[in-house]
Length: 152
Image (tube, rainbow, N blue to C red; front, top):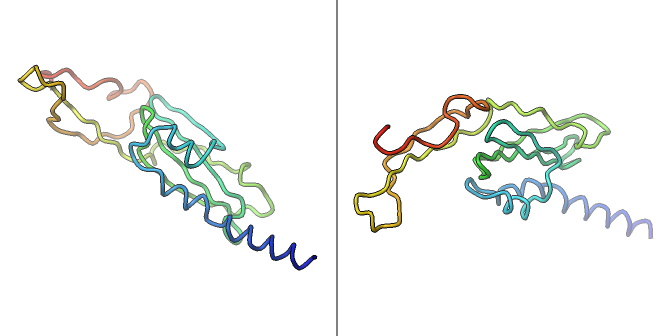
């Protein structure tokens, strides 16, 4: 009986190892929050700054001697990237060791500037260019809608 319990525990641990990492690769840039909830579940930590938001997930004992963390970055409700880090605090739960977000580490995002085509019967917009911008601080320059056509 004891041997069965040990074998079962080893199988459960083997299956649990890396599950956060395996699921996190299913999250793609542009996914909405609902998709992230479906793939990773409820985050262990959330932080906000202006139009930016971060959800953090962790797995206790993901490997030998460390906890695994995944950070999902959002801008206007859409994923802009996923980053990771590890913590080696012994004999602890990963939930007690979420990092304070360093907003300067946020993945870049692309701002698409668009205008309506000359033929007004078309319902689509034509992209006229894109600009890479750093993540602005809350209320800082670059926050808000793109400028109207003709004022670029």
